[in-house]
Image (cartoon, rainbow, N blue to C red; front, top):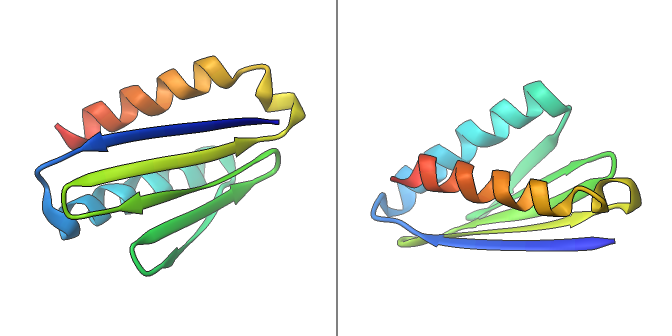
Length: 91
């Protein structure tokens, strides 16, 4: 089982960052059958073989992801995609 953590700062404010996280979750739900829900400023998500959180703050976003055995082999690629997606969304 692999764990991935990626944190980025932003200047979007809390509402702007929440909107970006919501848009990402909706896209993941459509493409990868991800289920998600908000608990305060934390978006929790889950799908077969992976689960995690997106913690949204006033000036930072932190993604934490746990991968099951099959997806662990792709952890490097998945981490790079998360970093790329965050960098594009938060700029």
